[in-house]
Image (cartoon, rainbow, N blue to C red; front, side, top):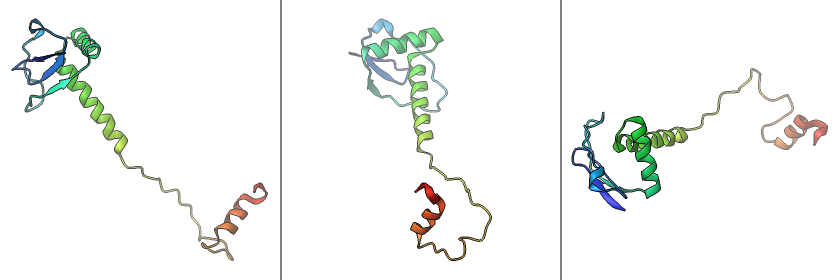
Length: 114
C-alpha cells in the first residue's frame, strides 16, 4: 500500500495508488478538516474509487459519507429501550391475593395449562 494525500483534500488515504491519481478538491461541507491517515485494503479502495467516479464525487466525499452513515447507524442502535406503558385500569390484585405470592398468581393465570 502507498500513502495518498492531497494538501487541499484534508485527508490521507493509504492504498495502491500513484501520484498521478491525486486530484485537487475543494473543502466539503464540514467547517474544519483534520488530516489523518487510514489504511484501507486495496480491493476496498478500488471499489470506493470506482463508486466515487460513478457518482462524480471525490474519494474523500465517499469515505466521509460512509463514515457518517456508519456512525449514524451506531447511534440508532444505542438509543435506550423504553417499554411502553401497558397499564390497564383496575384496582390491583383480586381480593385474597398478595404480590408476594407469585406462584399462586401464575397458577391462576395459567389455569389447567400448567
